[in-house]
Amino acid sequence: MKLLFDQNLSPQLVTRLENLFPNSIHAQDIGLDTAPDSELWNYASDNDYLIVSKDTDFGDKSAMHGHPPKVIWLRRGNCSTNTVEEILTDYYSDIQAFARNPDQGLLILL
Image 1 (cartoon, helix red, strand yellow):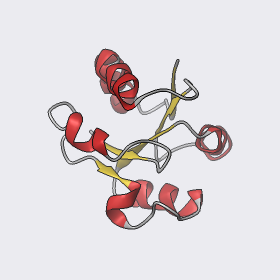
Image 2 (image 1 turned 60 degrees about the horizontal axis):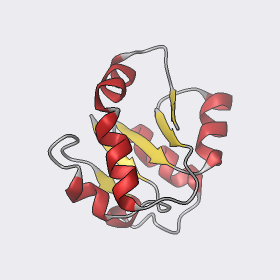
Image 3 (image 1 turned 135 degrees about the vertical axis):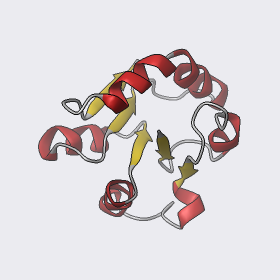
Image 4 (image 1 turned 60 degrees about the vertical axis):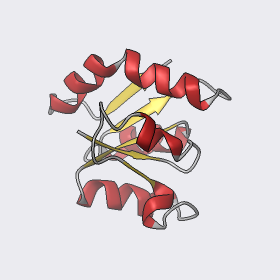
């Protein structure tokens, strides 16, 4: 289960969560930190990543177009990198179940 962190999240999350989500990357790592959402969407779909974002656009895109890629939408507004790390760690088992479920394409974490 590989995560692709959107540009609105810290690149530090890749190393901070490496033990739970190995082989995850940040948009910056692949030169997509200023790219349109559609490019990030296509990259995630083509390379089997789950997108993690605080951006409502990915949630909307998932609802309209389905999956892949799957989207984890963090609906927390402004929060620290520590808080994002805690959320993803606390919901690890839910994220695992979401990743395995072929019928789900959007996971909203509050």
